[in-house]
Amino acid sequence: MSAPGDLSHRAAVLTADKALWWSHFRGGVHMACLDGSNLLPVRADPSDVDEMATPELLDLLEYGALIVADLVGMHPRVFSLISWITRARPESVLLLRHGSAPLPFELQEFAVRPIEVADPAQGVASRITLAEWVVVAAKRRRFAEPAGADLTSRIGNPVVQRRRVRNGVRDELAAAAAALLTNDVQAADDAMLRALAIEPDAADLLLRTALLHRRAGRWVDAVLALERAAVSAPGFAPVWRELGIVREHAGQAGALRALR
Image: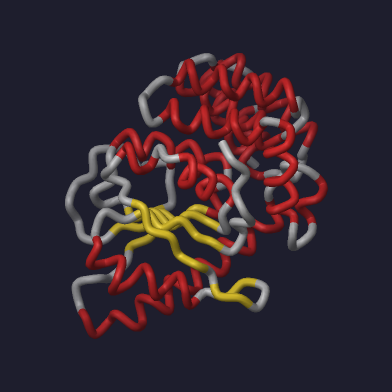
């Protein structure tokens, strides 16, 4: 794949509803301001697995400012990918839902925000609220990702992006994401192991690998990966949350301590 440009001021907006894109999501995300510049929302249709698998979109999901995901109309295989990303960096993925229609996937572990779209009079207020959520999430994305010490700066995300383009981790992350869109967890796991061979102490890669072990029911392998991640990035909260969960499933001591 060719090297992408700087994606740190672009936001992936996943919605199958074109009308909501124009009435709420486009304007709400563009109102959000980061480092003095408005974010550029880029729409993708999460009901279309092929569109979601394009290299350009996979890069945006990985290196953009944040992900805004409308769950209504999302294909289950797309949710498989988005849930993997959300567990790895929950603060920078906004999961939104409008209406009360049942969805074909389990949401129990995820924080889903309701968005009001039925009343046109609430449109402006809804866009303002969305913009506020987006700013918070984008700032957390900038400063909380443990992919390297360079992410403590406001330009950290582009720095990591450039490094991972050069060293090949970017290609392996894209391969793992594309594999999840085809329900091939083993291929995704293989890609993450290749990424870890390049950056063996990257806590975000260890966490994502552990999440794939969890999906496959390999609880002990997940514990080992998460314990390594906790040593590498002891302040990274998603690692401790997952460590508590997988220790409990593995029948190991320390589950409650990790969850605290």
